[in-house]
Length: 250
View 1 (cartoon, rainbow, N blue to C red):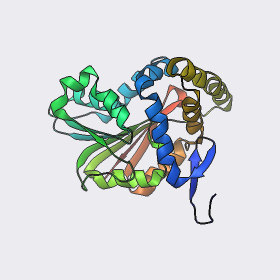
View 2: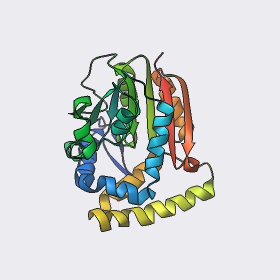
View 3: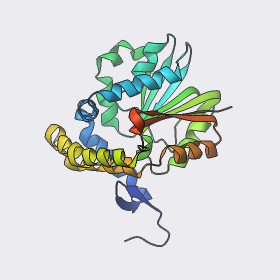
View 4: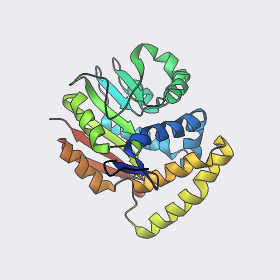
């Protein structure tokens, strides 16, 4: 039973204690790890690949840069980053070890092993020194963090002066009618796909609910600015189904 001092947050549409959310998210991604990449392709009809390419286009990796890819899971973003520029390296951090194991087993991981590190860790308490990275990315992961402002503060802390934050996340469509159609698809189709392909309805029901709980583009932009990042901008992808947010540590 909750006490008056317990802090609560959301887990999808459920209200839970903050202390419980991380383990619940860990459980979701442990359950879906082996089918995560397949489900991404099915749910988005492959469009997530275009979104991630758009992220790299805007990020514009340069030789010698060091990337921290938080909630990096199976390595999609880090692989793209390393392919874009020579003499780069990346750290993939995720709270769920089984996601990292899936990433290490991908062919790209073997080809880039000398430029990649895989770390189990929490976005709200990064195990790195201040001013350690040139770029920080988090792709479809920040909505699962218990306290988003804490994760943004940690991003700011570990970035070098002149470093850049970039967040790719599901967002809100600006047109109410289009949002309603998207919700009908999300709530009625995606969990059933999860059951069919990954034998897991509940995890994908949570993922759909978590998208609807995430702040809209302008609200999230304000959260990034409040952390101290400058020149904060965002770009909508596929009419706002997803959005890219960018900020600089000046």
